[in-house]
Amino acid sequence: MEKLLIETQYFPPVQFFTKWLSGADIVIEAHENYQKRSYRNRMVIMGPYGYYPLSIPLKKGKNERQPITKTLISYSENWELKHWRALRNCYGSSPYFEHYEHLIEPLFLKGHRYLFDLNMEILEVLKTILGFDNEISLSEEYIKADEIIEGDFRNFMKPKKGFIDNDPNFRPKEYSQVFEYKYGFLENLSILDLIFNCGPEARLVLRDSFIQS
Image 1 (cartoon, rainbow, N blue to C red):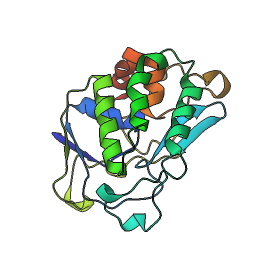
Image 2: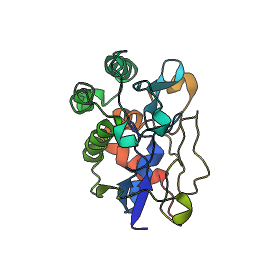
Image 3: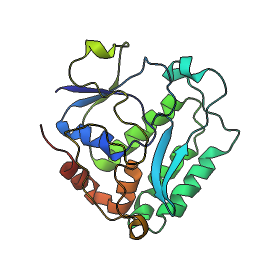
Image 4: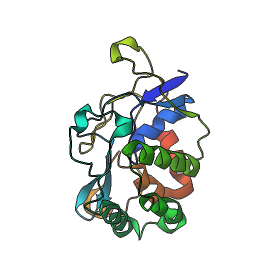
């Protein structure tokens, strides 16, 4: 498998990053339309009450029909401050939050106009933190799902509680979480949960969560 095609995601879940361990280069779908109820504008973290979804509000309009690269972020709700405060409140006591907050916080301060641009910058920062050297590129055109046999992971991951899908290559390895004492281990949260809790060991957890086929 030389390339993996996947949709843009907002601080993607752990499952997303285990795909990189195949050694394939990542191709982000740049010619689709925005789709609701997906990781495109949503991440799920762990809070004091369990699963804690955070969604980026979008400008009103028919987003479902908008090209993903033209989907506009709304700033009427001051969501960026709310999201950063939520991360700080949920992970401020985690072992590695203070080691990475200087890399993550600026992403909420730049006022990106387009969701796609924000997600791409997030992906580059996460790639650096995790030490991945796989190439990231954009698709040159839209390819229908039935035209791809292998390497198409578009819409494969969905932000439901504990949702993993039928993925034989993903078996989440448990690691310590801030509120684990209340809810046990919650699997497949945003990669930020893994980074803030495990720091440099995050990549090892990803490696142990990836099952080679």
